[in-house]
Image (cartoon, rainbow, N blue to C red; front, side, top):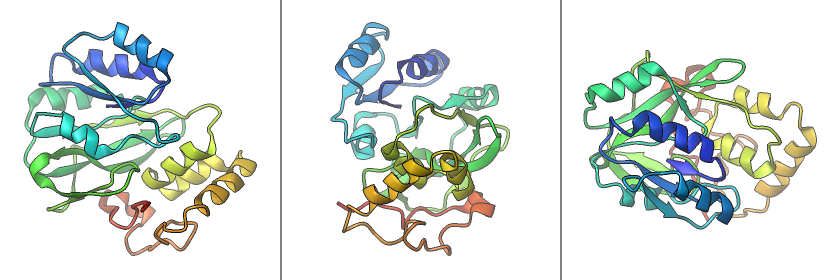
Length: 231
């Protein structure tokens, strides 16, 4: 799991998964006080690694993968709330080699979409690129995980531009619009931030998204190859 000042979610998910997975690894880029608070409330069996906070961008995914010894990985963020069905599916341990997208329900509107690269085997990885969510290329086509299983993703209060920048990579376009429609001033800040990256690929949906690679009406088959931030 990845964490930045969201200890409550991390502790919730540790409690849910502690007895049913081989190991739990937390990559933490929280403020020092929050980091110390998390360490005080987790058992020694949970591995926690400090990562340099890259603004509000998550730490390098490659760093987290290297810290996991298990062959199969379930990647969750601190604000992901697993459903009971998802917990039951994990208990069965019937994962097969490959990579899966995970059904996500955006709260409070309940919009559903498949988030790529949440469940995968190390053997399925061909390349890891970028520093944004899911900068992974897989050797085989991604399959949707069980339709009965999902995680919920609640809205954030006081969303800042850098967080919305992250969400733009991971959420279907209409969900992103829903997030910013009440924050037009913030939206302008996002454009300003993104324009400061001269080497960024011109595939982002504000700079001419390659719609052949992304169709929000059919997010189950989303492709993320062209959504890497190049620094």
